[in-house]
Image (cartoon, rainbow, N blue to C red; front, side, top):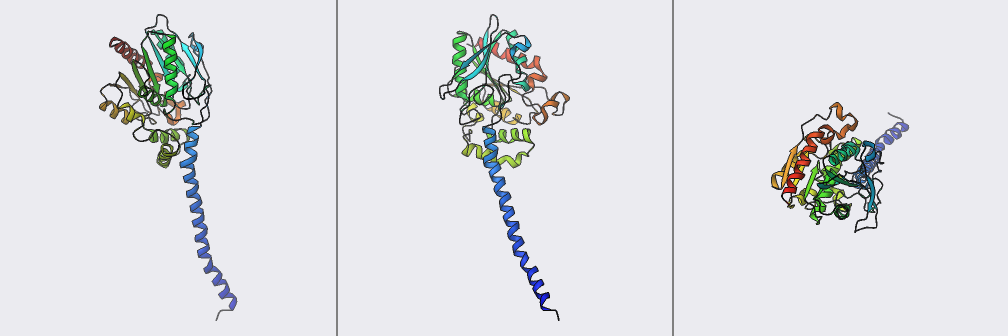
Length: 329
């Protein structure tokens, strides 16, 4: 027969089971709450208010004459900083909109070299820092994937028409700048043609892929972030995303797509080009994302890399498009 102390010990052991379950349940709920807060609140917030990338170069670095200018959008009390790079005997003006977290020097795109080559081709260039980027003013809404930034493009177009009256005007956007350009045309910016390069067409998918490229967090974990960004943080949602808006655009459009782009993938642009006959799609030569030329870009791979990798072909497509569009005026 066991002593009484033995029964007491056995009883204490049995009572630990429910307590352990409660602790594990509490831990699981805390982890779930942390996951939901991170994906539904913190990730969209970080995307809306990213750290700014400083401007590290200027057109003077490639021997290009330029002047600085400022414009202000009509929707907010903001000052946007820009560069004007005039071509001698210019035949057209191109307005350039950079991608998210970048600025007017657009380093990964090799923006400064792109401006130099365009100017040498007889095309003047105006480039600005969009709101919440570079040296431009900040808006309380933060980054909005084109929903508010289109006002900046409208202000830039007004400025450029006054600066170089009578010249054909073209709007070009890369990545998030492409979404901004699409929304700008839909809201009445008067341009003779639109150039899109690796444009962000799908808000949620683009957000998840961009955060993956930046942090390495798997995209499937970030699907709720894309949903929350559209539901609660103001990003364009179903029916108002750049892809949906671009279906309605009725002007000459050149779309340039890096086929292996891991961030703004090729499939949405292929589908869009198939559905809108105004879009001429050029797929840049395919390159592996582990190509040594992309080493500094990490998980961003070939995103906005067409000009950096294939400058003559990319520039040729753009200048040919501008020349053909000008003939149709």
